[in-house]
Length: 283
Image (cartoon, rainbow, N blue to C red; front, side, top):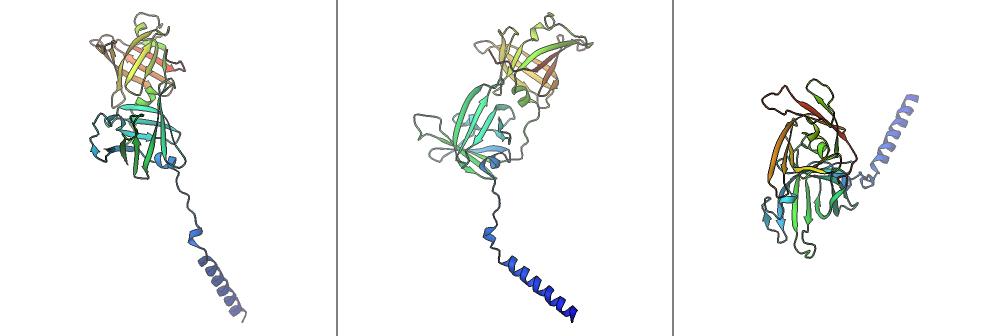
């Protein structure tokens, strides 16, 4: 009899527990939804289409929209990097999305942290697969606009050091010869490579002497494998003065060192030019 009572109590308890669980309204279970910022930073984005203010499709090479086309990486720490579809760095800086997900703001930055521009655009679509914004390029005529459509992509951010080189100014702090011996920065063999360097995200650069006098300006790039840096110096009229390709030995957040070979016919004779991160603003 005692066993029978125990079984009855057990069945009753199970019945009451099942009834209580079944009475829970599923509508009371609230799942946390990602914020607009979390959605934007959850994936890389690729520009896949554009439309004008009449809804007509536009070629991504059209000059009106070409400057907004590329692979975009909005990082959770509030920084962004945008690359052209050929993986060349185009812009870097900071970003934000308003809490309601209606606007996105980017501020493009120079290597020294100064602002190049800030741009606010209206968000039309933002979900896990699509990010579309509206850009108005004529502030006096808001009826003219372009819708820039991005899709989620698995395209990895280029890891060849472009963003690292463009994220800070660099100061030449040392030089060594092929035997590892220190070379004075005033030595004629290396003095022409000494100064403050600013490699900008738009592919242009400026180099100043340590006296803040402009020494060289033009365009720059890094090879896809991250092993070589190329600069093309230009005069004030855009004419090419010289092109120089150097081997990158070290490139991280605090050091940039390259190897210069003065005589291509004698590669065993070279100098390593050492740069370190600096907070020096561009003159």
